[in-house]
Structures are given as C-alpha cells and as structure tokens.
Amino acid sequence: MARASPAALRQSVSDEQEIGLRRLGADLHDGVGQLLALALLKLDGLFGEVKERPEEFESIRALLHDAMAEIRDMAAGLALPEIEKLSLADALTLIATRHEQRTLTKVVRKLAGGSKKLPHPVKLCLCRFVQEALNNAFKHAAGAGQSVSAIWDKDTVVVEVSDKGPGFGPGKSKAQGKRQALGLVGLRNRIESLGGNLKVESKLGEGTKLTASLPVRA
Image (cartoon, rainbow, N blue to C red; front, side, top):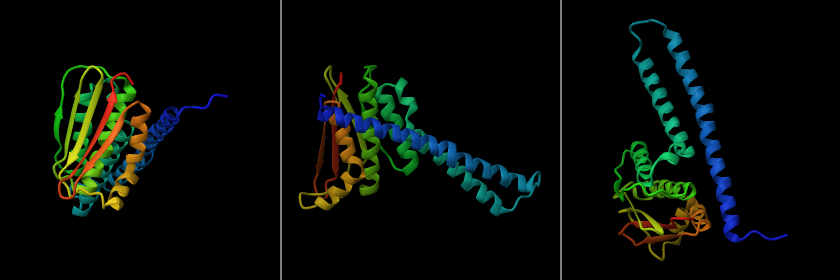
C-alpha cells in the first residue's frame, strides 16, 4: 500500500480542522445562539405590554442582544460561508472588518484589487491565516499598528499581517512558543500542504510580521 506524502497528510489534518471549525460555528449558532434567543423571548414575556419597564430589565435585555450578535459573528467567522463567492481582496476585507468590530481596533488594509480567481482552498487558507494573525496581533500587541496586505502575480499570492507591538527576539523563545501554540503551527501545516510557506519576522520593540506565500494554482 502506497504511503501518503507529508503534504497529503498535512492537508488531511487541515481538512479535519476546517470541518471542526464549521461544526463549532454551527453549534454556537444553533445551540448557544438559540438559547439566548429563547431567554430574550422569556424575558419579554415577563413584562408583556408594560409601558414602564425597570431600568435593570433594559440593561439585561441589551446584554442578551449583544451576546447574540457576538455569537452570530463568531459562528460566521468560524464557518466563513460567504467567502466562496468573494474575491480575495473582498474576503480579506470582510475578515479585517469583523476583527475590528470584535476588538474595537483598527486594521490598515493594502489589498491589491482586481478579479483574479483563486482556488477555494487557497482563498480559505489565506483567510484563516489572516484571522489567526490578527488574533495574535490583538492578544500580544493590543492591536497596535495592525496591517493586512496582499499582492500577487500570475504564479504567487503573498499576504502579510503585521503589528507594531513589543515583538520578540531570538532569546524570546517562550513568547514565540505561545504564538505557535495559538495556531501558527496548524497554519504552517495548512499553508505548506498547498505548496506555500509561512515566514515569521519579529524584533524586540519593532513588532511582528507574518507572511504567507502560496502558489496561485495550488
């Protein structure tokens, strides 16, 4: 029996991770989201048509609404059903916008336009890469100087995510290990399984830059 290549094995793991993310998104939407909706209905039913509702009631109701909106955003972000029909620039803009809304931070975008079509696995991989890199920028750099750029030619697409946080140097293996533990190892496997590569650059006091390069026809 022929043994699967390392790239094929990494792709298989990435596919399983993607299925897991989609299931988690569905569970959040159909599980927690529906429970919050039911709680809102019951809360409204307690007061019926009462005109002057207690201030605490309105506060609790607003919190439940905010929680529902956040769950829906999280579920959509995990499943990413919308990106299939979007260009890469539009898909990455969507990812960056959701990150801004969730974290109340700013993401500078430098995305090449055009209608260049990419295979869905490549586009999905780059969206996951930007999601994880922005999450890391928020967690480790408080969102300082977040930037997303994308350029491509006929053969390669290159996406960079950078921040202006504290960064880390060669002696900061512990900090670097934390970043990898938060998903960079999985991202590297996904990117390499499509024939690409992931580069991590960082210096103390100068921020961090992650670069994903993928062949257009992976």
